Amino acid sequence: MAITHLKGEEVNLLGNEVNVSDNAPKVKVVGQDLAEFEVGGAKDTLQVLVVVPSLDTPVCAAETRKFNEEAARLSSVEISVVSMDLPFAMGRFCTTEGIENINVGSDFRNKDLAIAYGLLIENGALAGIAARAVFVIDKKGVVVYKELCDEITKEPNYDTVMAEIEKRI
Image 1 (cartoon, helix red, strand yellow):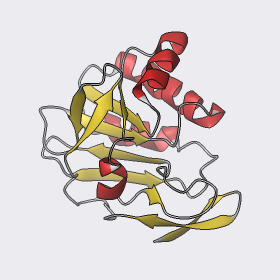
Image 2 (tube, rainbow, N blue to C red):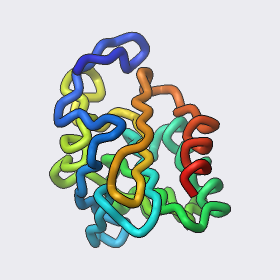
Image 3 (cartoon, rainbow, N blue to C red):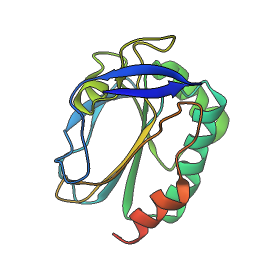
């Protein structure tokens, strides 16, 4: 799939495109402690899967802080932010920014999440990292909301994401 993604540059995304009403693939990502944890699939809670290119950018940092704030008031929702950052960099970011209400994971090892969700950027300056996207996944493991940001330097529509979450909790 081709999208306009980096200041007007068209890029191709690799992997299996996941859309609303599809089953959310279950994949493992690496946590700050180097232990793997699973995102996607069926769970006992509503999941919000936030995919960002790198926590080391102002937009990704702001997005992660925003979802961390929202998670503090949403006790029945599991929010996971996944990037391609090394776990050590994620750990520094979370410590510095006080990120403690969400799971933060890395897809750096095999890019399993980026490929399973069709988000791996194939070409251009950011080839090899994931596109910016948000998925809301119900308890049955079905995607009930998807936002693929058509410009990687723009944050998702938080109001729409939160409305989708709140009508399901």
